[in-house]
Image (cartoon, rainbow, N blue to C red):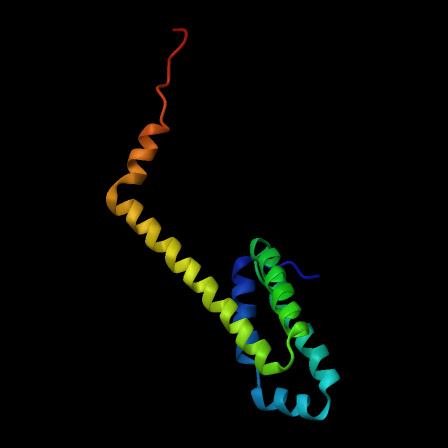
Length: 126
């Protein structure tokens, strides 16, 4: 497995996006769904592997959730809707977190909490 530095990983992700050809993928799905699925899995794995190590664990967790939704859905549209809901819920959680963080910073609560957790450093010896 190739090790990527941050610049290489960033360039590789851009390359993955640029080389995506929707019509080619559509034709493959219509003519050979099994090959399409194998290629899709390789594509996703390549993108995850080109991400930073810090992100890879989270991306694999997300793919597990997405694959679980896909396997339990009655049809592709249901899977799409449920995955979309998952995305919107995650985005809303992030929005709420950012609003709470902004409120904390704006009201000075963060500074007050830092003062409460501070300590006096005592000098020992000469």
